[in-house]
Image 1: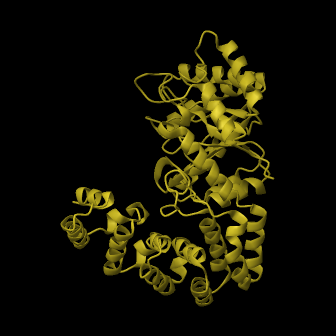
Image 2: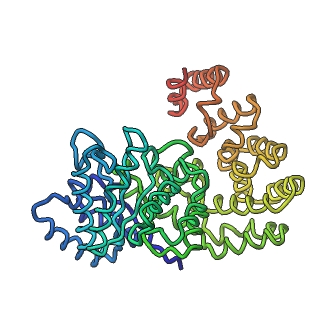
Image 3: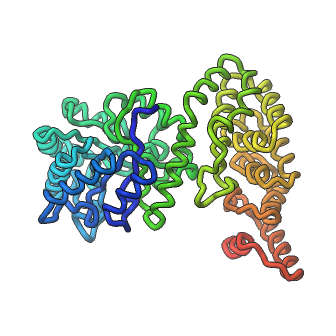
Amino acid sequence: MSGYHLGYGTNGFANHRLDDALAIIADLGYTSVALTLDHQHLDPYAEDLSARVDRVATRLGELGLRCVVETGARFLLDPWHKHEPTLVSENADKRLDFLARAIRVAEGLGADCVSFWSGVSTVDETIAWERLRSRMPAVLAEADRRGVRLGLEPEPGMLVETLSDALRLRGELGDPDGLGITLDVGHCVAVEPQDAAACIRQAKGLLVNVQLDDMRPGVHEHLEFGDGQLDLPATLAALDEIGYTGVAAVELPRHSHAAPQVARAALTALRAARLDQSWLGEAQRRITDEPTAVRTLFPAAGRHVGRGPLHPGSDPDGLVHGTADDLARTRLLTTLAAALPAGEFATELADLYRYGDGAERRGVLRALSAVGDKAVATGLELVRDALRSNDTGLIAAALGPFAARHLDQHGWRHGVLKCLFTGIPLAAVAELDRRADDELRRMITDYAGERRAAGRAVPADALRFLEETP
């Protein structure tokens, strides 16, 4: 069993009372919470703060929730300017007072740490860095006095943006024991030169808080798992590998409008990503040592990791984001691709598809986004075969990122049209906006006209496409 505690951030429950949010988080099966101090959630400026802290501490104990304190409230300190002032602002008094209050709250809650970031610099970097360095000793002293650890979070666009920046600051402060690292694994996708798993290994021994979300390279937008490019199974495996035992909480601050459903889906994805990791890890090791073992392990994936959709709420059939066994099979094929020369890998890939059942074929097609560039000709052959079928799972899987990169325009257009004919959401088509052209618009216009002439409804996706495409 993993030693870390899966949790959820209260900033993703901004429309809920704190007591209700904590109860839902616990009822869903999370064992920890990342508590963002804010107006509606344990306001650090409340006159009866001490009593409130005591009540929340009691409630956390009743619910069996471990806790970290987060300080990323947007307009708590200044109602006009998000996150201001920061530790690198000209006048940081309000921020320093807030962090001192957060430390006292964390002490009262018995929280693992107080998590914080540097802030965005609007002055010369040398000046901003000196401000940060000169203000940290006071924060560290207060935390040390109260026995609370701090977790410095690298944040895209801020002065301390990357893990290397955080480690640099820590080194310049003398590597204080009380200053650890908060790592948002989505940020690793967005701005780090290495993946999240490598960042976790680099921060080994210093991690005091982990935030879980998905992102895309170069874009600081917190996404649900599967909507970005985070390798979630590898990330969670790395936490196990380094022996992390703290909080790892989902960080989806813009999803409060559907908080219970999003939190449930996130936990489903996390459990799927854990994939009975003992089995998956052993399977990958076997394939590395003996590549032909994939022939028996690939079909067995569903029995060991489950077959459910990764986003059961928004994608119950797994047509857009895939399923748990799709994800596991991608990991197996990624391992196989690293173990074999290109020609041998292409042969194994074709055989797994040719002799597999529907789920196994779908797994091959979904894995092409990760491994298809090593066997482009074979991958295209499999994509074209899937697009000739009437299996919606195969068609949706075939139109992923690999097809977006390599399938000819004629075949790709007909694949998009086939989605409309078979009821597959166009959200399943990777890079639709980039590859759509006038000919596809004409084809969908004709399709809509034929539906209207026959007295049949035009699919909403077709109407949206015709409205949105220039």
